[in-house]
Image (cartoon, rainbow, N blue to C red; front, side):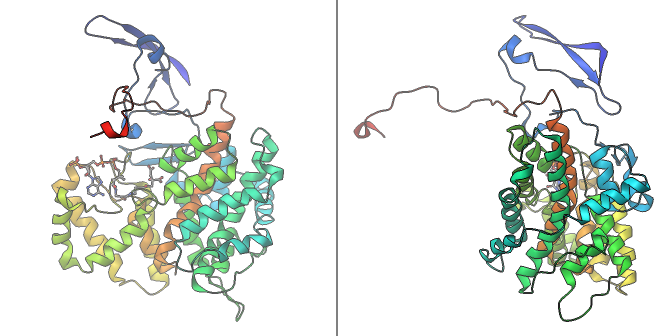
Length: 435
Ligand code: SDX
């Protein structure tokens, strides 16, 4: 971060105040105006609901160019990482450490993560408190938060070793907890992790194997899942990452912060969109119904949105959506489902939307969630678990951002202000004098 020669000057038309503010330049992307002296100098706050024009931190982890449709993890384009950048654990190492691992570093990292995939045997009893049809995200919020009660040896956020151990534990145990949530929902026994399988193969094994017969890992499907995890690993200061940072700014332990991130990701406007996008495709049902559905979306009173479309930052095609569509082809071809009606419906809907002025004028393009539901459904993952898979993938991004925040000398407890529009001070009337 460097100081720009140019300063920002704020002056009021009535001449009541004038303030000069520094401008900082990052390595790429928009500059920022440092407004920290604004309140002290003017007695006023900025006003920016949804933080459309507000940078809450400086970060070196992920960069998005919304106009170009570009996504970089530590400078590497997502297209390169997802296609020839190795597996998800290599991306995890990159996001956590800033550089891709060499062969030795990768082996050590994989071994460390592999050795932490089991959860405490008592964790299973938390599941029994849930109804079998509980949404997996409610189970994950509960069980991830509960991890803090088992790891008192890694809760000191000011101890770098504790931060490192908690990061590994969370990355390693999320697949186990997500698979346990699935097994619990279908009444099958939990499957222990296996150290002889890769991260994604181990997850597929914990999800789909049973004690009754050997489970054969399909490497094409494992690679597809691994790519889904890479595509979802991190994404700048999105709502759930900002939630993790805000929770962490109070000094909360990492397990509590990740549980908060999971809760935020659950929302249909955010991580819940993949589940909502698949439900939308099932509701549309056939290509013939697309025009009527699009008309509903254009009718503001309907409250209907084109789920899996639009993005706060991408005003071009989400690069992850392109890669997800390619993964769709690979998986459906591998499974002999080339004619999957939902995939054909999704492509028809995408084509129509991308030619429609309503979406073009609002720069609404497919985002990562538009195709991810179709791929996950083809992998045998139930719709209700899609956002749980998103949380599994995003845990490394949340943790990397949390670690960056904790070690940032500028970080303070997050505490936004407000524009108060309620009642000025007034006296409490006796009850017999109230309206
Ligand atoms: C994720 O932030 C991240 O990085 C998130 C994420 C990540 O990796 O962490 O990328 C993951 O959350 C992807 C987004 C998943 N959500 C959805 O697919 C749900 C559908 N999308 C919308 O809810 C919406 O597009 C948002 C929430 C994603 C973005 O909303 P914004 O930036 O606040 O945009 P907006 O609501 O101001 O929309 C601008 C206009 C509005 O119309 P007008 O008022 O100008 O007439 O576009 C319209 C909106 O009504 N619009 C849509 C739409 N999205 C925006 N209209 C129909 N369908 C949509 N999907």
